[in-house]
Length: 111
Picture 1 (cartoon, rainbow, N blue to C red):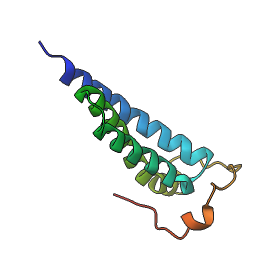
Picture 2 (picture 1 turned 60 degrees about the horizontal axis):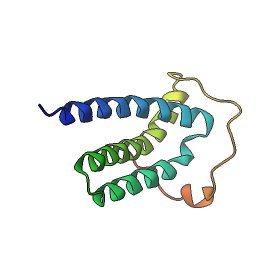
Picture 3 (picture 1 turned 90 degrees about the horizontal axis):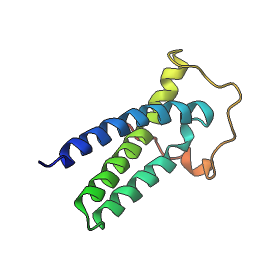
């Protein structure tokens, strides 16, 4: 009996749940302008998954990368939800990310 599929399904479910958590927390503490950093992390994880010899590890890294890429698109949406009052806004937000002048020129991705 092969349980690898069930394990990947449970890992995917857990990563999606973790994705909701970190998007809410990252937007609350740092703001949506940090969206390029999880996007780059997600791309790196997906590219790394292409070069792993084991299919199981490759799938785990690919799933994690996809969750981080999805989360980067959700940061702007989360900021809008916070402005609407669905989530708490942080009045003492941390400083802007490095390279904020370039980040503001790029339209944030959204699904």
